[in-house]
Every structure is written in structure tokens, then in C-alpha cells.
Image (cartoon, rainbow, N blue to C red; front, side, top):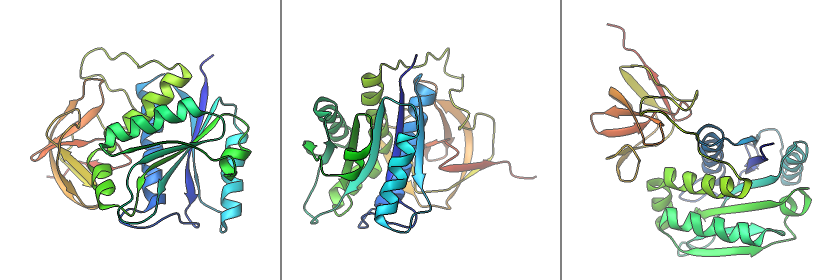
Length: 262
């Protein structure tokens, strides 16, 4: 039987996390959504994701999140957070209760993907999430929302970060990558794969020089419209839209594609 996971954003819609150059809650939701997609579409992973929407206090927020995790059959709990400190603070961390080795791997993988310092694993047995989840749990501090350096690295390397997080989780739970026959085979119902004329960005999105999203050329703000030239696929079969400026995500959570009426 395939081992299962639960991944959640650490704060709620009504109980905001840290806000600086980045908004912790909004960015955590993006990371959760993308990592979940990778694990369940690009790997043979099975799991659940959760975003808290109803709590109005921090205590209720934490209780609801932990209740969701404990209510699922799973082997690993993952909480996504972003750090906050002085403008000069930088780096990734992974907090744990009793999962030192996994936390060390995760912190190093995030740092490598973002190109920032690895602050390493941190034992934090007093934290509610780590103390009250009934399965092994880790709490990721992706980077500092108060750091210009970290924010720029995160925006530039978002896809690489999510792939790195997913790879560590997949390795820990014994997942394997799905085999894709040919570059035109879609791997994900959450992606567009047919011909469209135009897209509008639902969030800030990057435009990349290559299909593997290794080099970002520029970023567009939410609401930007781009003409679609064609659809391409990365090496693992993930669809990308080709625009006049480069390659753009085809994930329905980040862009809406449509046909222009003639």
C-alpha cells in the first residue's frame, strides 16, 4: 500500500501569518498546492491538502489544522510556513519534533533550490502543530518574508523549490515518478493541454526561457493577458504554454486560458 501524506498551509484566511515583502499565508497556499500536485500527478503519491478558512483566532486556527491532519490516514504531516525577522535575516529552516534526518534533508533541499543559506533542522517540541499531530511531522520555514534577497530567490525559483520539497517527501515515503511516454502526454488534469488563444494570470507568474523553468526572464502581475502560441511539455510531461515572451505555466491554479471569439 502506498504511504500517504497530509500537507497544509500554517495559517488561515482570517488569521494571517507574517506579512512583509511576501505574504506568508498567500505564498504558503501556493507552495502547498504545487507540491501536492507534483506528488499526486508527477509521482504516484497519495495524500491530502488543507487550507484553513474559518478560524478567527490563532488557537482555533491551529486546532482546526491539526484536527484535519489527525483525521486522515497518513504517514507524514507537513506544514508550510515562511519566516519573519529583520531585513538581513535569510535562509531556510525545517522544524521538527522527532524527525531530525528528514528535516535536515528538507532544509538543505530548499536552500539548494532557492540558492540561499541553509539554516538547518531545528528541534521545536513546544510548537502546537509538531506536538499535537499524531504522526511524524515537519514544519517548513521556506524563507524570510522580510528579506529582499529571499523574496527574489523565492519568486525566481518557485518551481524548483516545489520540486525539491516534493522530491524529499517522495523519497521519504517511497514514491516513484510517473513514466511519461513522449513529450505530448499530459500528466495532470489540473493543466490545460489543448489549443487556446490567450491566457490571463490569476496570480503573479514567471515567464521562462526554457521548458524546465530553470531561467526566469520576467514576471507578470496578476491579471496580465498573454497571447498563447502553442503548448509544449517539460521532460516529465508537464504542459507549458508558449507565449511570445517564453514559457509560462499551464496550471489552472495560476492561469486561465481561453479562446478569443473571432
